[in-house]
Image (cartoon, rainbow, N blue to C red):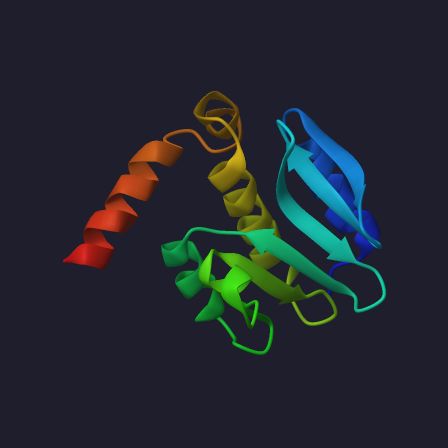
Length: 127
């Protein structure tokens, strides 16, 4: 289980992250691009992942992490049940979402060699 306080602390620890309202929810952005949204009413996060990362994280438990059930899901938007997810898994997913959206230089501050990782994943996925 991950609390909103933990979610917020992790999200705001990434370089140049801002917290802004997004309809009735709270969004976390880098360079004005949303990488995560928190829905307090449903105790659920929504993060932006690549198609490959979405598939990998969803494979850990389709009741905990799963694609949004519409066209947004096909674009990588992924839901996380905050009352069910383990903190380490959540931290990895949120970091991955940040790196997906952030400019390369900012992403490398959070996860050095992030580009190499993406290239390796893409090669493995297409093999």
